[in-house]
Amino acid sequence: MYFGAHVRSGGGVWHAIENGLEIGAEAIQFFAGSPRTWKPMRYKEQDAEQFRALRADSPIRFVVIHTIYLINLATENEDFYEKSVTALCGALRAADQLGADAIVTHIGSHQGAGFAAGLERVQLALRRALADSEGSPVKLLLENTAGAGGTMGVDFLELGQIIDAAGGDPRLGICVDTAHIYESGADLRTREGIDQVLRELDDGCGPDRLAMLHLNDSKTPLGSNRDRHENIGDGDLGEAAFRLLVNEPAFRDLPGILEVPGLDGKGPDKENLDRLRALVD
Ligand SMILES: [Zn+2]
Ligand SMILES: [Zn+2]
Image (cartoon, rainbow, N blue to C red):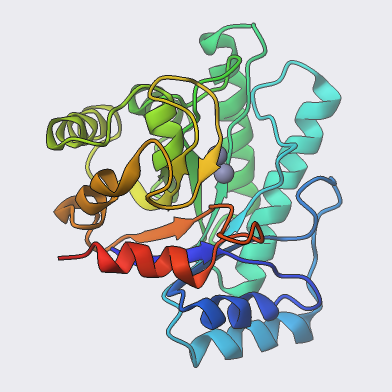
């Protein structure tokens, strides 16, 4: 595994690369625009060019855009649904402009309508986004959830069903958030727990869909269904879990990206990256 972080991209998107390099990241994730507004980001060609040139000369191996938090691809509210699909398409377009490797998105909640009803809406949204970005190499990664309030994609069975229903396009993949999976009830603190997760991943989604991890410790206990990220080693998962995770052969070539609060509360920092690297055998 190689390590990176969610970074700021304000004041010119190429700053995301500088902000990543400053803390020693080999992979970066950022929001294209504000994560709490619908307005899709369209970069000036000059800015995108500067981003691509800086990246080409850097040790950054993986670039991913995180979609806005508002997105709900499973909602029955038409207006909200259309805005969500538009935002998903916008993120794919922005990623393509920057030469990014992927976008990662939360799927959303069926809000009580049930998984099957949600699945219908999600698969259509994914098909529309893939068609809108046809020919692009940018991957569309679905993130697992902590399991709160009807959220879709709580385990690999659900994620696999969603990918299949959307037609199984090779650009569809998975991002596993270590805090979310622990909060949803999978114990990553033991060898047996991790082996169980790997079996479920294989059974639910097949061996090749996993494209990245979000490496976050959890402030809340196993199975809490409450999503609260903590700095590496300071939470309920603790150092033992991350030692197993960073040395896991199945994750060897994947980026592990921090979304932790940081020691000074300003987001992922060098200290958290150092903690991860110190655990590698
Ligand atoms: Zn996320
Ligand atoms: Zn989270």
